[in-house]
Amino acid sequence: MSYHHGDLRAALVAEGLRVARTGGAAALGMRELTRAVGVTPNAAYRHFADRRALVLAVASEAQDLLAEAMRDRIAAIDPALSPVPAAIAQLRAVGLGYIHFARAERGWFELAVLTQDDGPPGTTDPFPAPFALLLDALDALVAAKGLPAARRPHAEWACWSTVHGFADLTTRGPLRHHDAATVDALASYVVDTVIHGLGTTQLEDS
Image: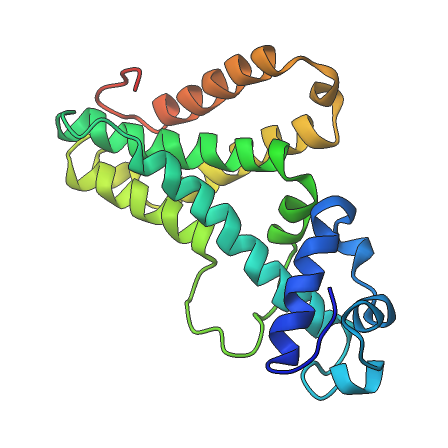
C-alpha cells in the first residue's frame, strides 16, 4: 500500500497488520513500514516515539481481531440454551475461539499476546479485549449459578494459562504437526477439562 493523504498513523498500523499477518512481530521494521506507505522514517516518528510504540499499536489491533473471533463464536451459541449451559458455552467459545485464532492467524496471534507493560497511547480499557471476554464469561457463569462464587477468584488465570499453553503447543510445539481434526478434538478436551476443573455444576456439549 502507499500513503497519499489523511491519517499516517492509521496507514502505518494498517500496513503493520498486513505484514505481521504472515511475518509476526519481526516483520514490523520502522524503515520497511514507512517505505511501504511512501514516507520517510522521520515522518513516522511524529506519531510513534520508537519502534516499540508502533509494535504496541499494531498489537492492540491484533488483540481486537482476536477478540472479534472470540465474539463470533459467542454469537453462534444456541439462544435456546438454559442459563448454565449457555454460560458454559460462552466460556467454551472464549477458549476455543482463542485457540482457533492462534492456529489460523499465527502472525497476528504472536502480536496479540505480546507482553505489554503499558498499552498504546489512547488505551483506556483496564484489560485487553480478549482477556475482558474471559472475565465476562466467568462472571456470567457465576451469575447463572454454574460456578460457585467461592471458586471464581483467580479462575481466569487457570483458564488463560491452560488455553494459552495449548495454543502455543499448536503453533510452535509438537501439535503443529498434527492434522486439524485431531487438534480440534484435543482443543475441545482441554477446554472442557479446565472448565470442569473450576468446579462447574453442569458440563454439557454446546
